[in-house]
Length: 258
Ligand code: IPD
Ligand code: CA
Image 1: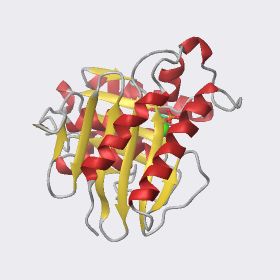
Image 2: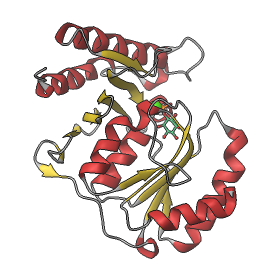
Image 3: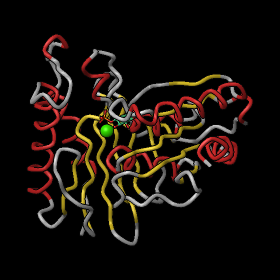
């Protein structure tokens, strides 16, 4: 099948229309049949329909649907960084990947509608910011690194462990960040802006597109045990890095978790 990923990226950009002009005053937290859910659902439905028209044989696996990973499918997070969207923090993204069993993620796009930054990649062809700047991870060691960590706000039961690891890392690195859009965090590591990231519970749609950028940009991504990520697992642990700080993160995490 010949894929027109340029057209797919255009559709992702077009989905911005569901966010534009919406007042943050109208936003409520997810779970209340609320406005954010409507934005998420609108984007998910729009992309599902448009992608189905283009490629009816490709399946669809989205945060907004109770689906499963299939052999050949799109993996979509219609809005990653939901809380940021609610608070007008302007650090959210639409993340779409094309996954093929046996090959992994073969295409990914992450679009930040607030900055108009588009991160995209095709497997084996490099990853790019706005189609022209090649993405490349940093070569910083842990002493010079900035590390992001996720601590899902709906999983407060893990907060103690997460913040204990973060404190231990913070003492040895330059600083810690909490951008809180994992899809964008992976873009930022791929672009050398920050150097590493960990989270105890992450979903496939948060990381599918970004995983390809990390691979193409020379970075590394594993679970807490150092194993490859399984995209059919809806609750995996994750460590992402520039490669240089990976062992440092594995060690720090397992000193606490271990
Ligand atoms: C969340 C964000 C956040 C991460 C959470 C995710 P959502 O996705 O990526 O950075 O820490 O685990 O659930 O809910 O904003 O789509
Ligand atoms: Ca998400």
